[in-house]
Image (tube, rainbow, N blue to C red; front, side, top):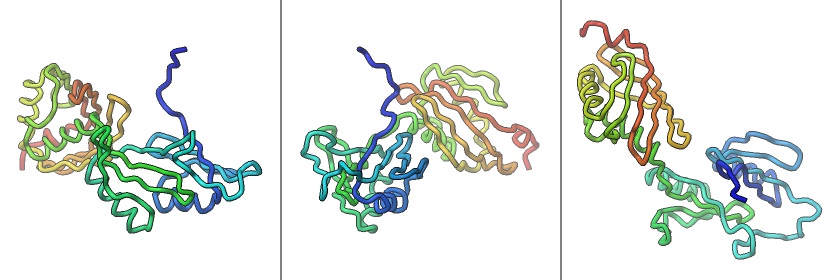
Length: 242
């Protein structure tokens, strides 16, 4: 059959009390509601839609979730950093949500925190670092700290900016960035959008000429930046230094 798919489109859950479930998922956990109708609401967990349905006439009275029955064992959503994992574990505990605290999964050697919703449906917040996300953040950390050697450029990276024109090769790209570093006082990342090996980053450069809003496009393969395209107004950076 060889089904071709980009991944899971949505997951559907059945709960005993829809208002209680809505408060848990959308107020306590903070997932955004994207659709709501009679007996159902949908929220987004990252890019995955989760539908939550109310009990109906075929739902057994007093039914409860059991991870040991045939069917769903648990759901897991990805976590990019250990700092975020520990923050969420502490927030779950503070909100009175039953959870395990941070644990280590010996099968994949990854940390996670497991928790349950009001119907005892089992969830995990699971360490699943995103190599694209990590690589682009390393780029901005390298700029902010003037440590260009920390940026994971592929050896044949292609780079093109309003100030440079096309540049090919990690050595040449680092040489160009080294030339502009004296004008950069800081970097503030506002948004990172990742889709597979592609990423877009909205940020502000704090420069000796003032604040410069910018947007960068990246392509990352196997944790290395193979393409970078910054977009910004270069005029402030071309002004004479104060």
